[in-house]
Image (cartoon, rainbow, N blue to C red; front, side, top):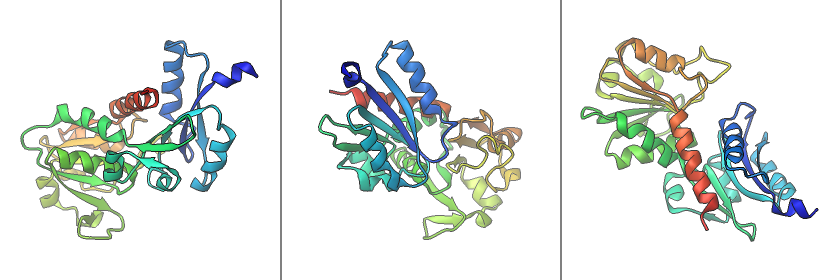
Length: 253
């Protein structure tokens, strides 16, 4: 039993996450750093209500968690404390567990997205369309606001004036919003032919298309943008940056 005491377990909380980037990334990191007692596992749960049981199962060893689709909002109810940025964003994707077992929520998507997007921005990138309204879209909106880029959310079911419908997307709107960010899961492996329903014919070389998806490396959304001369970027660098930030948070004394 003595050995098990020092085990450091980290986990990804999500639904249908066998494909997950995080497990591979951190398993590789532990190898590189020769952290033989560290392990990264998936908490693949069908409902957020199962989270408490999972935490209970690993209580002694669990040091931190990442949170992915669809629980970045639901997880708020399970936290003891929430970092200021995560509170403002309204979404949590990283959780630190204290020695006393207290859970504190952070948002490292903000850091990852900003680091990944900023080098691509040009003078004319003043307005953006955010496709999707889930947890990740909230971090994206937070960053755009900081960068003074005006944005509109595009949703299948718009609920207020801040959101527009896919049906509203016309030549004029696409031509006046040169940054388009896909925060939906459409196009993720294995459904690689799917893509958000936008009028791609109006995309030009002035556009920047950013997809939070990283598998496949080039989604249909990005390919269609590239065919029209747009600058494109997938979500891999964002994921790596947010993972590094999460690692810092977990190990910050």
